[in-house]
Length: 386
Ligand code: T4K
Image (cartoon, rainbow, N blue to C red; front, side, top):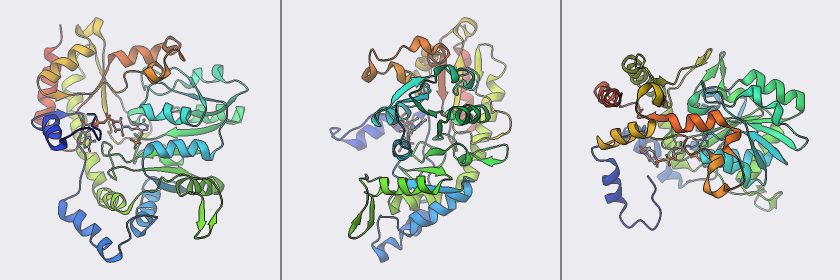
């Protein structure tokens, strides 16, 4: 759904988009009274932003929940990525994946860096670590992999390559809230891991994000970048931006964090039901949770092989839409085919990503999706088989 300030009547638009429809996701929210109770003391203090008590509490609670040594909260996941790259002082080329949301590539380009696109592993949809080394040049400064859909990248191999070539590793961990790998919190890997707490995520602060890291110097740099480089009322030490999380967003996070484990459990049940219904259907492949991963069931992508299934992804998408079910083509188009990069990159250099982007459909998934709704979605998908 794309709305902007030119849209005259938001209420009508939201009615048009939401009423009677099953959308790809639906924001998790606390009870109305719970949120009101959480924000009540803001009316006593009048403290609305600038790292207030809600921000402070949520930051510490999330540090523990994500298993991170250090953490800072930001306005959104994109600013976490963009400012992290700036704080690390990256230069030249950055090896990354085109199979992601616009944010990952845009953060690289907006830092004046050149993205070098590596193909993906068609099973996990994450960057194919075996293809990274061939892309390294004397201009490469970092690797920016994405734990796409919550599937964890080949962390060991990526770190081995980074150490060998002296590269930074910044994980786009927007989809991996609360996951762990081999018992370690997902916020503990690489030089930094950037999270999104957008309304559409497993855990949301309405808009919000965070970066998890270990190095104190990096932490100071991020803090300066998110708060104008201000060190005191009369001291401004560096040129920073404004990317602070406000108290209302932090309050939403405090409430949502109380329920996130229960929400993930509900997602698990919905995902299990999808598997029960679709695993035996030839030509449909549902996302699999990787070994040693504690998953969060953030997304449920399905790959449709038109040769075997009979219908292609676009046909399935259209039939679902006819029934008011709006799956999404995450992540199509690939970022290296975006209009804004016309002529700059060749998507044929990432052939697996190109193929998967044309075959994948992210099915509706959220905590309150009912078994009956999953059945309806699966019945319609199965009816598309030719
Ligand atoms: N890296 C990766 C890999 C990412 O996926 C993202 C964000 C980022 C970085 C950047 O993080 P942020 O800066 O956004 O924190 C959505 C989200 O806006 C975006 O956060 C997310 N990835 C991306 C995958 O999905 P759209 O354009 O698909 O959103 P939209 O408005 O079409 O919403 C999708 C569905 O969600 C709606 O059909 C209904 C539901 N919804 C949406 C909103 C806005 C709600 O239930 N409540 C809501 O408030 O991008």
